[in-house]
Image 1 (spheres, rainbow, N blue to C red):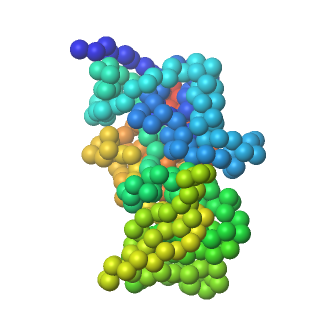
Image 2: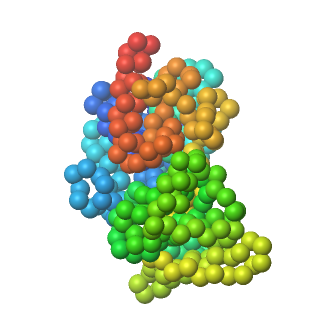
Image 3: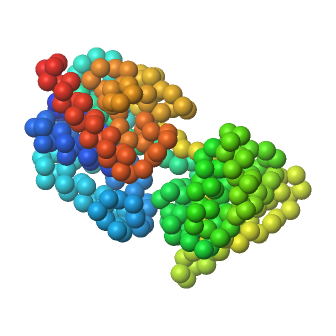
Length: 313
């Protein structure tokens, strides 16, 4: 049997939301424990250049997360390399069990487990992730000024990404496996009216092609879903926009969720449907999904938790 550790505040997740919550909670003298999870640092650790973090004209994603962790530790947070396997929110203190065998009990919990972009699952896609393959146009579109890009998907996300990319790219090709889009009509109208956009209907991505030295995308191969014929579309960047999956498995049967699995919080706060449980960052955010908004919500969660604990000590 592993050890049992109790804390006033347990933070689960180690992206911008989790680390910011740890900084604020530490300053409030709550001595939080932060359990990093399966991907310490979150999605930014698989991002190269970050150019939209205030105060840094350009910073490497992994470097930014190392700094955030160091900041949290310097403030007094204890950062633990473990993965929470189960979380019982049925009664206080709340109980979490880690892969290490450690049981964590907590008076309050901040969930900051994030969300993961859905990928196509192609080996060639994996090969070029961060080197021309992206799932975030607002993060990486700036790098494709004057160049051709491809977006795949058919919902609001795909159309919004394609439209955003027209601010930078010389040409945007949207590839969709059906003959119509699922996106809202107003977005479709904007897309079809934009002279930079071409739509390739009834095609699915077969593979991403590119160079090895240096590693970079040069195009995608798209397969006609009816005939199987292959069309190669040249591009410098390939954006996968088939949605995001919030990492809400731990709480899917315990907390109120919405919009396909995102944790629902009271508007203007980070309070979930269970008192003493707070959620922040991409786990709750199906709209913005930015590092800076996640960090802001991490701050909110720590302040909400501090006030709640003061009232329920």
